[in-house]
Length: 317
Image 1 (cartoon, one colour):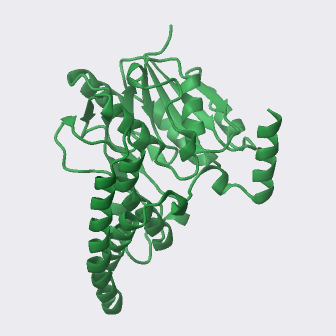
Image 2 (cartoon, rainbow, N blue to C red):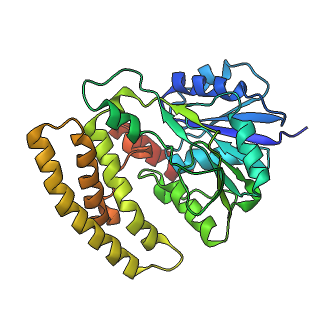
Image 3 (cartoon, rainbow, N blue to C red):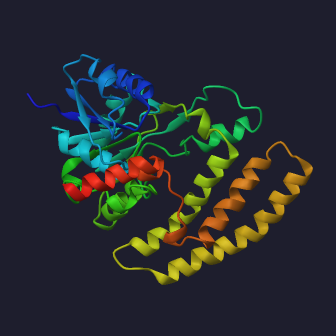
C-alpha cells in the first residue's frame, strides 16, 4: 500500500544530523501511513552508508550527486510515492505529533501548503549575542491557526503534490543562492494556492556551530533583505515600481539603521547584533541585484576539484 505522506529530508555532508532528523521523522505518532525519503546531495555520497543503516522499511535513501538545494528537493519529490509531501531540514528535529498537527490543519483549512514554527536550540552557548542567534534561526511569528496571506521557507512544511506547478518545481537557478522555495511558493500564490499556519506543528533547529556567527548570519540577513525586490523581479511580470519602492525603503533603512548600528557598536550595547541585522537587511533591499547574491549551497560548497569533476560529469551525461 502506498503511504499517505512522504517526509523528505535533504542533506549535504551532515550525516549525523540527517540520521537524527530521520529518527525524529520515524518516531511520528500519526494515524496516516508515511515514508521517509532521505536525499544525500553530496557528490561523494558521504551520508549513504549511515542512512541505509537505519534499517527501517519506511525509509528510502536517494543519492542526488548534482550538488544544489533545488536538485536535492526535486530528487526527493521524484522518489516520493505519496500525494502529501512534508519537508524537514537535516538540522531540524520533529516532535512526535509534528506530522499529525500539519495534517490536521491541512484538512481543517483545505490548505495547499501548511507551515509550522521553528524553534532554536543552540548546541553551545555563544560568548555573545545569545538572544540574537536564538531569534535569527527561529520562525515563530504570532499567527493563529488557519489561513495565511504570506509564505515561509520549505523546512517544516507540508504540501499537496497536486498543487505543485510541475513534477520538479524547484528552480535549478537557485541551487547555490537558495530561495528555491520562495520562488515556488510565489508561483503557487499567483496561481491561487491556499496557505495555512499550524502553530503546534513546530520543530527544533540546531544550527551548526560554524553558522552561529555574526559573519554568517549577517550574510544571510543581506540575502533576506534582497528577497522583496527579487520577488518583484522574478514574478510572472516584472514589477519595476515595486523594485523601486523596496530600493527606496532599503536606502532609508541603510542610512537610519547604519547610524543606529554605529552607535550600538561604539557603545558596545548588549543587543547591538539586532541593529547590525537591520542595517544589513536594508543594504540587501538596496543592493538586490542577481549578480551580487550570496551563495550558500551546491557548487558554492564544493572544492575547486569537486566542481571541475561535477562539470565534467555533467558534460559527459
